[in-house]
Image 1: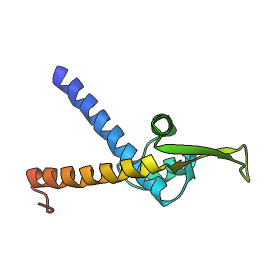
Image 2: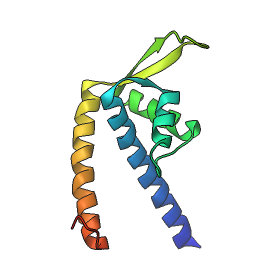
Image 3: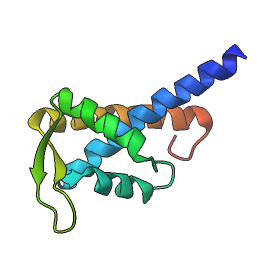
Image 4: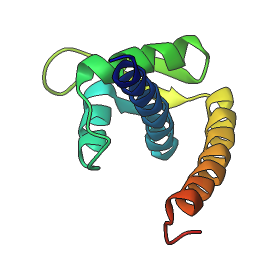
Length: 116
């Protein structure tokens, strides 16, 4: 049905946006490599995502100038690509955090949440 397809697509887009914000927030704390980011997201129910979802988001954020990358030797295995926020990334995080707070408050109000 068309409605189901649209709903699934909308949910996918919403999830990508939420994951982008979550990744920016994780990298605000400290630089991390992809595997660390996947593991950190998995520690939060609802945000767990595989490498096939996370790495394309990291690539897109880096191409947009929100993340910088640096290869570092690993104590075990091959070198790892570390990601860190750029100044533009910090600005984007600040803007997205404010937008999320406003939207989640409004939606909680509509849904009858306790934050209304």
